[in-house]
Amino acid sequence: MDLFNSLPLKKQEYMNRLFRNCTEEVKYYMSVIDVEADQTFIKAGEECKYIYIILSGKVTGVEWPMHEKSYFFKDFGPGDFFGEIECFAGLTRYRISILSSTKCRLLAIPSIYYMEWMRMDVDALFMRTQENISRLVLQTAEARKYLFMEGRDRLMVHLVRKYEQKIPAPEILVLNQTRARISEEVGISIKTLDRNIRKLEEMNLLTLNKGKIVITQAQYLQMKQDIDFYVNG
Image (cartoon, rainbow, N blue to C red; front, side, top):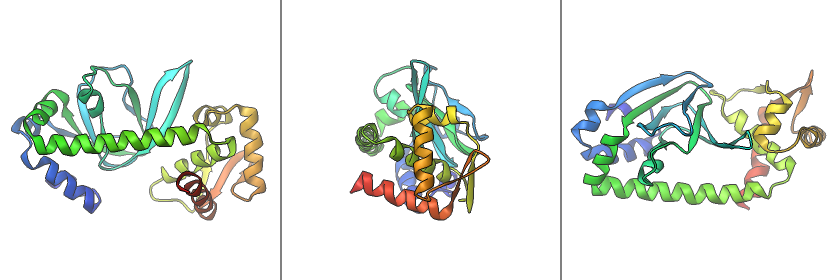
């Protein structure tokens, strides 16, 4: 399908196999929508009316707020699905919020027609079940590792994510977030955050300019290498 031509080649092939026998209702009712950066297009608690597929851009998953704090847990990109797991689980409302990190193009499919298709197409159902189980297993493992990370490593994960959210990748990233927002997203206190910012500055992994965090491409690559070693060994 021409809709998927902007995806990486392997994902194009996957989507073409997946949609090979999709129903006429899916083809008729699906639509392409554009979302500006920093927009929440899925809100936790709202009715699961649509399955969304990212065609271009990046988004961030935000866990259901607990104790008035949100947990920004993972970034996603082209080819990723949202709203599907809730429907497979028989849930009627979205369990997480999805925030656009960049300008995005989405494919929206009414969930009622999507699930009717899945019930009729055994091959497509198997492909999506396999993909969803793999995604859940990996996310659970990542969450466990993140839970035991020190504040410095959590901050590096955050800075790497923020750098990778910029398209195209910048030579220098100036982080415009407040300390309060960073501490909320990283999950550490502002006092702990400030201490670890100083640590990373001493390690030459970031610089401060008028109180703002500045990261060069070389610093990003070094932090990414350190985090990948911690996570994957």
